[in-house]
Length: 373
Figure: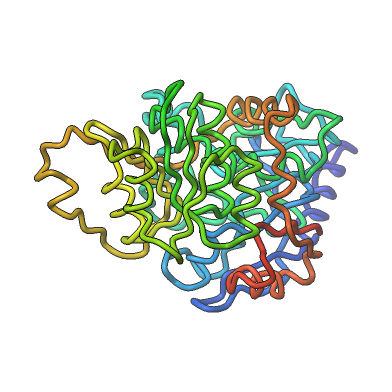
């Protein structure tokens, strides 16, 4: 056996023996820190060493059993890291390079991708069919709340992080910023529009910022938490409606002199906010729904005008891929948005169960947590 072959076998054996810490879904109500093998790298893959990641509201749906994933799956879909190892066919990147990958990891060659819908990349057969096929991390393949993450189709999904941007500056790009902005984009916000954004959690705050970037000149944020109201103003909200003090539909119709809003963005995933967003639309307005719903929605007959109101209801799974990440990091680098205010708490990976408890119960004014292995 020649030396090169022996070296390759040794490297494979070493990779098989390597272990890493990871946040693993055990059963509804239990995500625990445990050990797993470090993933082996295929020709089109990249292994990145995670430097910062976070917990998403969707992860809480998984924790509660409201969104089904396979037992034993590593959770998380918002990675920032350093390339540890590249697949043999990957070009244009180098080991040691600092990168992000979107929560949505399209292949670039599926039917959905070729139709321009990168988010809906088709099923991944490892854990069974999933209609939101572009969302793989922490859904159909192991995710980012770990020391290492295997990124599929690396040339489509890895985006280099500019040297002058910190991990926390770009941490929202993989999902929260991409999703929030997509609410304004799919809602078709135009210069001079009036926009209502229901809920000012991390996604709603980014939707507020996205509406401002798209040209909205009056943004109404619906939120009751004072700290979130303050961040909403810094992100571009012109008016704040506190739904704990007044009916948000009445308040928005009053603010708009009965006209209603051009675009309403729902960023919570509840029947009450969805229905309120529909009720405040002007004739021909658009409801952009970003929330993840855990039960069937009902469309009330009145505000739907029996189906004759020329309304548009659009849903969006956040865009992914390296070009989306490049554009979002360009927005951050320009200074037009500073998402660091969304990171309110920081934990080591070893304390991720504590982080989940804090985030799931929304204690201590938490918006987003930064997790660092």
